Image (cartoon, one colour):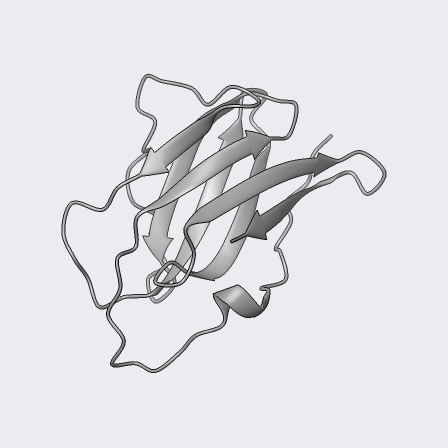
Length: 119
């Protein structure tokens, strides 16, 4: 069973100067071997998640989903939560979306958790 995994943030996700303003759009690639039914994104500065980005759609294994922000924001650090079709959830915290263009998710059977790689 997949368990909640708070991923370590790699160098590409470290915050940079507060004055930086970037485009937060990115692609999410599912390489977990499982279907994802819901994706939530919320600013790290807020305890709340935004709405489910997939709506009635799903993100099948091997497929990608483009996350587009409707308006520019000065916010760079965002949290990402995915919900699998069996109800399990995984989270990635404090992703610097001003510097990341793709997030790929992998299922690690040996560790029994989801691993996120950001580029």
